[in-house]
Length: 193
Length: 279
View 1: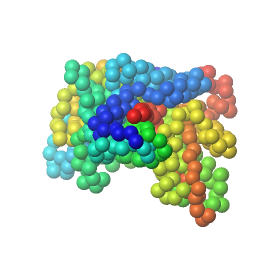
View 2: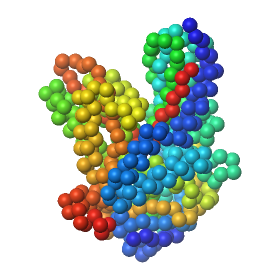
View 3: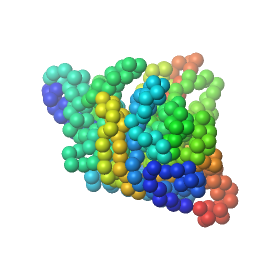
View 4: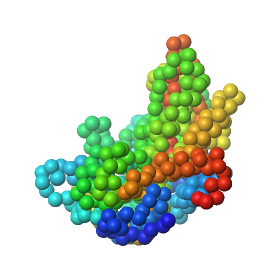
């Protein structure tokens, strides 16, 4: 199935999504990588607010290349999400609804996705030019000193994503390869995918 | 004796940094296209199609293919009859500085592994120098992203583990990496040498075009067998499932000690970049 979603989203918006579905996401998406996550944790530890409204938000794990003059953004594919595993459950418990990246997540993140009715979506790894094409506006909103790791507010239109972890415990990184391997034993099933 | 100026080195390295990051080598693009044609799984086919769209879009818009424009790995084969006028290493670092600046490439290098302050210009380059006969200087820039680099592994196997042990180690590495290194991957495999040498062999293997098998038929066959086994894992493009987990792999070997069987796997992604020039 393909879904069109616009941020901010509610758990109800996300509940029909299943691992393997595709999503065309529009609206505001915030970028954060390792260093920005670390700083967000420090803010939370100090009881201070996060630099963006977290409720229903989408965070994209990306460090884009610098934009050429006149361009909105450079190349902007996802970075490996597993490095954010230590921080994500806390943000999901605060209301972050969508994580966007690539690669496997740990059990704590999977549990937090289920607990909060969130989702983890994959952008296409290594396809930075393609992902950038959906970004219409960009504004650095804090921690400019972090360079490519600064937090950016992106406005995206039909950002093409694939559901990896859904709120029912589905995981495309397990079910996808398993379904393909099963099709080798029962080639007739392949036609139905 | 031929003289090459530091300025010429700098200029060449700068151009190669930009070229490597915006244009995929022909052999890698061809392997991607061949995989797409041979891929039976619909979602995998579609995913490979999008990866190809990304290549054309990058070319059209003069954008880096991937936002991780990598650590600048620079390989120089320097002819013994060449005299470099000026500081060789500084000339290369300066080339990286200029290429990453002028090319709007991402600066991804921190000056210290623990204190982690970005150098701001993607220097220093990781330079590998080899002296060769003659009076040419061949430079290859191979920017390496760390999504895949982080999935690389090194093992000091026992001689008794033999070829089966090596195969098991490689397949295990790909399985452990799963979706993380942006499959379909390219694998550089080093076998033999010492602890440091085997990693260098694996890295060097990534420089060999995918349509060139190992010249030794024994290792050419091992390359084919390993590729089959890795692609039987079903991980598929982006880890979504499918036949295409690995686009190609190369094995490089070296003599080793009677007591050891070092093996290293340098994992690279579908954006395996390299660009060369001869001065």
